[in-house]
Image (cartoon, rainbow, N blue to C red; front, top):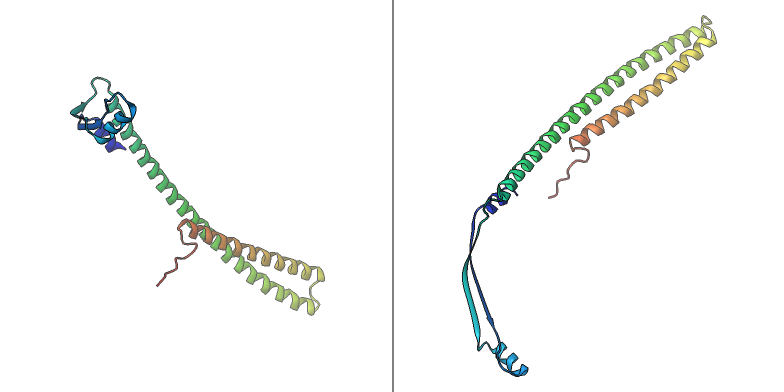
Length: 174
């Protein structure tokens, strides 16, 4: 668009021509036949020169197109920056979710170990049933939290892959 605007501001010199025929008979049927036969052709050849003086339209149009092109470049740069920010945020979110998975995995291992110790103590009669039930509830709670952490981590990985456009791998056709 910008290049077309620059071209439109230049003067235009064209070679124009026209050929046509007419019938001059008094009767319509004979006049039509004469017009179609081309017995009285008329020719027109000329030079057409166009330029604009003083309006400033082309200069303003060129400025408008230049500004529009710059605006589109800025929009493209902002879009690229936003994609980079989204990519970094998705990566950071996946790392945080992975750390949460590791934390809940460690807590789960410790709760299982504690549950085994409390269960041994209960069978020996050293611990009340309330402590066993509390330990079992804590173990179930951390199992649920661990499953949830794994799920949110997988979702974060999928979102990160989708931003990189790797969610669905390309299939190579041979």
